[in-house]
Structure formats: structure tokens, C-alpha cells
Image (cartoon, rainbow, N blue to C red; front, side, top):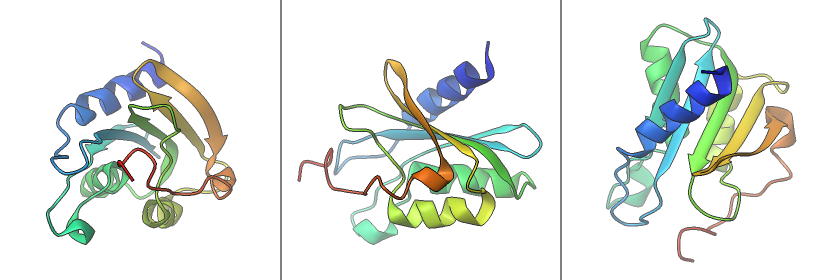
Amino acid sequence: MSDLAAMIEAARAARANAYAPYSKFAVGACIRGGSGRLHSGCNVENAAFPQGLCAEAVAIGAMVAAGESRIIEVLLLADGEPLCTPCGGCRQRLGEFAGPDVPVHLCDLSGLRRTLSFGELLPFPFTAVGFGA
């Protein structure tokens, strides 16, 4: 299995466990730490919306809990036509651990749709598209 295929599979498995009863928008994330190990996460919603967790935040938490502090690759997987990019808060979180050249893979359920660098994310706005708004 290729490195990218392993990341997609880890994100897909995490996404299957997403807790998204309000938005019905399940997201899976996988990050590769500096050691090469994969760390995945899914979104976890809460009725107090600001208290929820994005998939990237959960994956970062898993990476830090495993003793790592550097991200060398990021992958997001979600269903839908618009590309699912990290929200502003997750861009800031990722920026704590990832440099501007870190690849960010944006996937839907069929696989990879686009790869860009972390530094290129800023032109892609975080919107409510995909959340029924």
C-alpha cells in the first residue's frame, strides 16, 4: 500500500467513527508525524457548537499524545463536491506543527482530489458550504 493510500485508509476509518449528529458532515483526517507514523482523527460535535472538535484537532491531539511535535504531511477526507479544507482554527493549529511546504491532500470518498502546500491554504476560505447553510 502506498503512503498516500495508507493515509486515505486511516482517514476513512476515522471518519467512519465521526460523531456528527447535528451537521451530518463526517470528516476524517490523517497526519504524518516527523517519525513517519500516522495519526488519525474524526470530527466530534457537541450541542455547544464551539466545544466540538475538528478531525484535524483530534489527529493533532493523537500525534502529541504519541510524543511527536512535527507534522510532515496532512490529509483530509470528507464527502461532497466542495473541497473540504481546514477551518481557520485548524489552520492555526496545524501551523503550530507544520511548515509552509508541508503537503495537504484534500480527498473525497473516491480518493485524492487536490494536493497543495500548507502555505497555499490561505486563498481557500473556510465557509459553511457542506453544513446546510
